[in-house]
Image 1 (cartoon, rainbow, N blue to C red):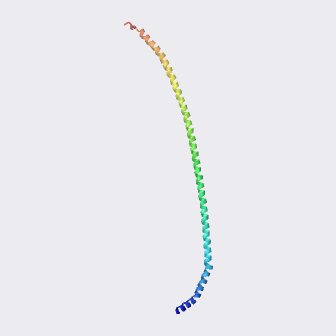
Image 2 (spheres, rainbow, N blue to C red):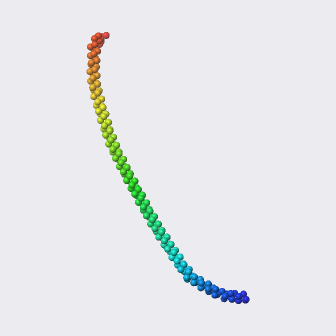
Image 3 (cartoon, one colour):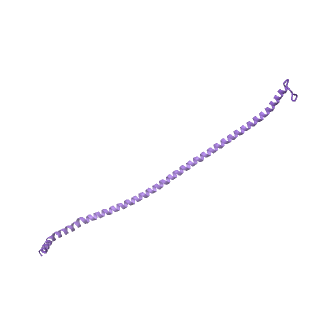
Length: 154
């Protein structure tokens, strides 16, 4: 029983310490921890809000980037299409020019061939005319030669 009395007496002596401890705990809680908790809660809310805003801004930036890339891709495609159209127009113009020059040259070659053929025919006709004349003159010279044997007299 002496132990129980000692424990009771020890408990009675610790009651003021426990009361002081509880008062100190409630005081610190009211004065220090509650405002600290409020401040931390506000900070966390602000952080969450800032993160949400940052994600929104990042999403908007990504969307603008995609829009910009699409516009850039379309602009490049347009430029390439214009370049291709200009290249094709230049090729068509070059082909037309080559065809017209080729036709002119073919006409010139055809005319020259016709001129050469006419000259050839004229030269042939002249040679045939002259050959008959030369043959007659040769025959006459042979026949008029003194001491020439007559045909069929041998």
